[in-house]
Length: 275
Length: 157
Image 1 (cartoon, rainbow over the protein chains, first blue to last red):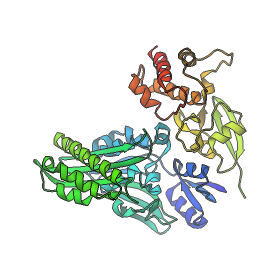
Image 2 (cartoon, rainbow over the protein chains, first blue to last red):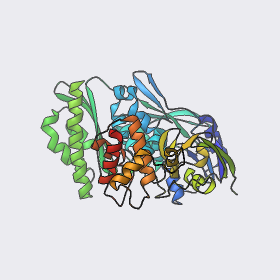
Image 3 (cartoon, one colour):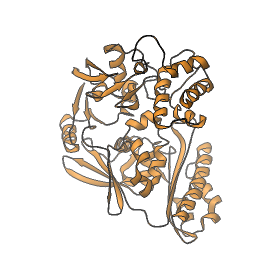
Image 4 (cartoon, rainbow over the protein chains, first blue to last red):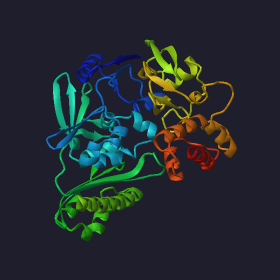
């Protein structure tokens, strides 16, 4: 086994291209190192990205561009995130324990694509773009297309995440992240991210995405459809049943997801009204 | 073929170094290469908190940090609570003793470091804040009540 430090994302991508598929990128290591300890992963070469950049938040075009090496604890504490997309901080608080959040990065969480991962779910709900670099250049992928299936993304083996671009949220938009886990810090049984824009009493736009219930973040499109154009208070029962139905045939997860979707909608609407 | 690399870091204010493999964890480097056996090996997944240390002043699970990622950085173990080395206990340890907050003792090092960090960020925390702070440190003996009692007493001072 070899260990190589990359001083930039471009260099890391070059190293991954040169070293082939047995090389793995590592940043905070909060998924990869446990997998190595359990002998579930045995990379031949580790390309360390942690010196390739710094945690960063840049406002641009009304949205926020988050550096891939931004840690979960940075999301929790950032004033920019609290102002522009607080659901990222809200979701980050559910990740593992304080030690995981002190090391784990947003780029790593997205690239790892755990189906129970909070940040992939929120990235889809926010309509974020994931910026990457490879020897063929840079590109930006919509989060909705980035996640393919269990631990599998659209990333090529020699491509690394450099930034996450969160678009500006429209006025009168509120968000909420609701999760149920069996123990604090454990993987979610289910979690739902809601991002809702109001026009007066009615819902103009709604994004509802669940995690830990499918092979990738699950867009609850039927429940979103019920919500759009409706007064949220009038359709809560239907949102709960549509969100649950999307998760069947697992009856327990379906029931939990329905309830979480309902709670997320209620809270997101309250927050949208307060803005 | 694995390639050993030289790791140098600051350990509890002193210098430490070791030749380590790329997949050697900081936990293993501490225990087997520098004799810091006060750091305990528990789950290997970053969940249980027995291997808690401070890396540049922040709580981490040393089992999920590659040793080479700690190169040129500062590592603090529970031993830092006793700089004198004269056998006198830290007031937090005294509180653990008074309340019977250590039984088998395996979680204690992680609990002590985590409680000290809580004191840095939140002086005189509530019981709820204490429970939240130690949520990532598992204890299978005490049921946590005595640990919370001890931390509460120490941080109230």
